[in-house]
Image (cartoon, rainbow, N blue to C red):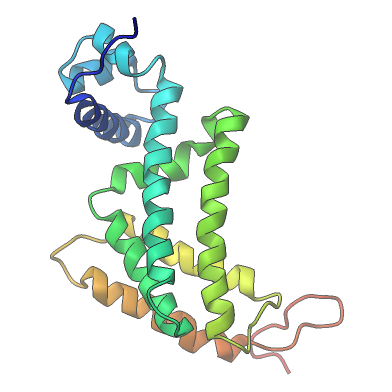
Length: 212
């Protein structure tokens, strides 16, 4: 007979993921041992193995849960308005809100995705691609000067860069709010992109800004 799960199984699992993410972010995945995780969670190694057979399974669930949440909130933001410019702003705000209290998970995603097996990595990369498509679609509609041209990918990834790396300097309650920063990033992208939307040269390269 299969072992019945305790009523608080999911609560304990999420607590293990959170503490593990904090340790992976602080010490790195290779530098974090199962013993360290068990001690930080206040459980025995035997109980920890009841939840996860190894560190890679832990790492996958940390990233899988984090990315699933991002895809869900960005999808909701994308569907919240038909105005593409407002959609870009909503996506920026949704990402920053989802990153709240998730700095460790976000840092682990950036640094450790490559450490997973190919099958697991591909499953997570597909969710990352979904996020990219949602933002790039909104930008292509909001900026007809850019459309689906050669600037769309660098513009999309530049916006992700401004949002994804904010955890290195942003502190809630100091300086800009998340809403302020979402507005700033959106304004920079939507107002600045048309200034560099020059026709691609015949060799397919984007013309240099300010070139004559």
